[in-house]
Image (cartoon, rainbow over all chains, first blue to last red):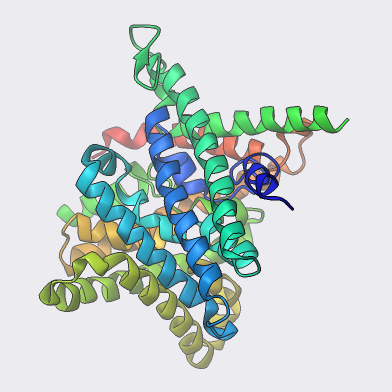
Length: 196
Length: 190
């Protein structure tokens, strides 16, 4: 598999949200607007790239019996780094995303890629896998956020295109489930059409 | 009165699944049958309540006095993972019947973000020990409630003729969305 393929497969064929269906909590919880979704995606991507690269570096040193706790410590360390950076430089985004930033630790995408990819591949390939999966996750979150923001408040990325009150339900909790559900239906329809 | 407010708020108004989006993976994954969802719900109630006590003591008697509360995330996740293992071992010895009922669900709970989420929230909300336990217990009961209701609906959904593209997760998510709308009706309570 060449380098470009690794990146691309994370975006479409192994899309973490629509195909692998991993990391549902932040997907539903933080996508109230396009910018929040993108921010959450970027934070997850940063952790994913760093942890994939480091785990790939140390994979031969760690005894296989204690590898999962070791991976979790590495991931948790990077989550703490990202958390502190966001608190310092992006305090507003940090407040909106709230508890979901420390919860990146238990995002199954990250441990899944550590175990499934980084533990078997070289440093560069693992980092690129992190870029691909991270981009796929960020893209999905941004799309979900954009749809919810468009219906809920008539704007995308804060750019208002219909003024007045939107359908508030899309920004509230039920909207998260509904939008993700219907987007998945759309994704299934499109991929089924591409296959046939 | 304060405790009743915490209980009602955690179970109904700020339901962990429908309002806070924590523990979605087991919510979608283990909600196929009512009986298994009850087992999972009970296991979560058990683990979250114990985890709340341990995390509270750790935060206020170890991390804060040592001035290393920025290590919160790393310490909490490790302690929760160890705790789940320990609960499993102790349960196996002390109460084999309970272990039979909850055993298979316990390893799944380590990656349940509701456990870590509740641990972080109770520190954020600056609850005291009794409030923390009440909050953790009722949040877990809210999770169990959501899970059992959802499993009941999904059992019926199995028998329905769902369009091809909607099968599996999409229809489950849309159902959860409608349930979340129902739970929004509680928002005036507290």
